Length: 407
Image (cartoon, rainbow, N blue to C red; front, side, top):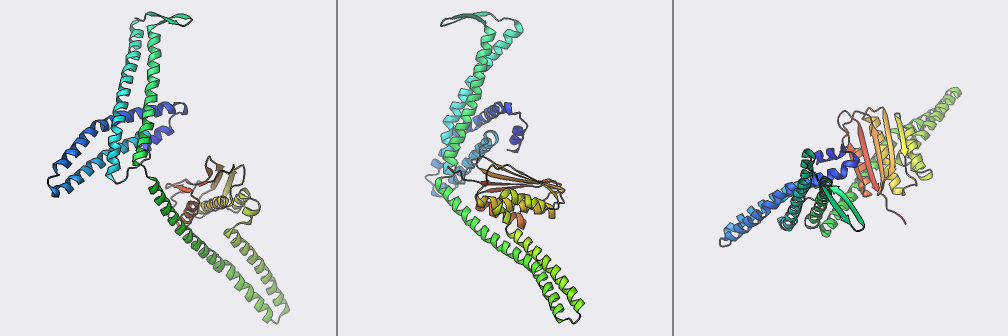
């Protein structure tokens, strides 16, 4: 899959359809091996199962043997589909759907391989004949009569025309058969609606537990901020005022009051900072763009924000995007030794995508507390988070959040 993805990334856009058709054709040729082996597999499984019927003790062994054969052949075919068709269907552990798929695929694979073989032979015949005529100069004129049209052409031109048509048909057949195989695999090997429902229930259960943990972690962080910052300044302020009240020297008392006043200003700033870390007021009053700009301005690094949303996203989406961006920026400041951070927010066909890129040293830990809590917040909104942070950098955090379309 990685090699195939690399081929697609380095293929010019205009050649992508031809490249997909060529890859599908290779997949069909390799699929011919599965098509050829399927009858042998079916007969072998049937024979060993039938042979073991008179001996009950041997039935278990033969069933296990048939299961191993089925799983091996099915895995081989799944690897072919994934490599050449980009199929994402992964067969389950149950051998029964695997066997049903192998049997149902056989006529499709055999018929498709036969059609492709005939088409390829005719294409080679026409194009090869045209090449021979071009080399030896044996092309001859051929009269062409159509309703109301009388013209003359050459056998070489006709060979090129029919060869090109058959070549296009070969590509169309390859793409169509690949789509048919993927559809059959999804139908017989893909998860059922009940499986999808169970997965969704499990996902929601994990997400709910993750949200509870994230809330608890956030409460502990707020408590640390209040204890280590605000509480210390309140104690210092109380001590200054107490000393001023007990003192007998008016000048000394006035100096202590001035110190207390300065400490109170720092206390107010500290409270504002804690409140901003809990939830920025700009997010509600001015919107996501202003909140992200404020977060960038508070960062000691050079941080640029590109905001491409035409309208404000829903509140829960905006909140998740904001905290995701802030967490990524904070990691870049604390751990990445970065010099510059880029924040990009854009709308996609299905939602909002956030990309935060820094030029730091990389090596970010996806299991770290900040990123783990962020992933829980994103999953709670049915979103997805990905982290690309190789050693040596750079680091890119991508967050996708679906936004329901409104009519």
